[in-house]
Image (cartoon, rainbow, N blue to C red; front, side):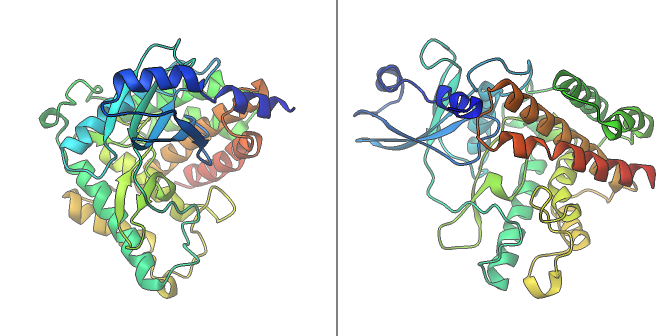
Length: 345
């Protein structure tokens, strides 16, 4: 058995211990849970839980040592509760378990929402009309999130409101350095470049932190978002930075983190980057910044740091997915794209 396979096995909860906790903490739960692990889940292992009382989802912090500020499923539980109250499409959450003795790490239980997950943003199997509808729904949904005032939805203490961009640079620099397993000159250059090019901040809003196509559920038959998932990186921050992270998809090639670069937008129904950004700004009520590229560089730096963490977990044997080594290796080419953009500004 490989190191990664052993790590993956370690993420599976003990069914008996989990069953006792579910019956005591999830209203209406009954039966012995049957578990199936969802594909992906590089960050927090996620399982479908089937029982006599219905279908649920368990999302847990990975077993084993992890970076200090990562895998915050408790924060994810809190923001999901607030988002659902505010009318944002997210699953209903039932209970949070902070007692690590139950299955070995913190976890929470939410509703299972039937829907479609798409990994390829080119949506090759859909019609032009369906593609246009899905992208418009994603755009409208992130704009709705960014219009929310955190103070009005119970998230006033969810994060600091000042110096978000500066703190992001610091955070992802620390994350990268903690996960360093080799030399990457482009990351070193970005660590020096980013603090010297900070723009002014925008009004503080709730930011998702990882908003992309494979982190939303699409209606089973209609081209619209029915649930936004994976809120682990959410906080109070700069909405333009959050949207730029989503906009990275247009800058990457299809074989580099599932991008859209090179797509014939007119024939596919997918909006080009400029059209998509203008629609968002109109919906959220913000003016276009003069320095979109800074936000894109920062976003690429972030994802490279995240991927570096995955690469380190693959080396240590604590990765949540057997493809972790392959996925983590993308940190280098993404940082190369980021530095190429930064040095040309």
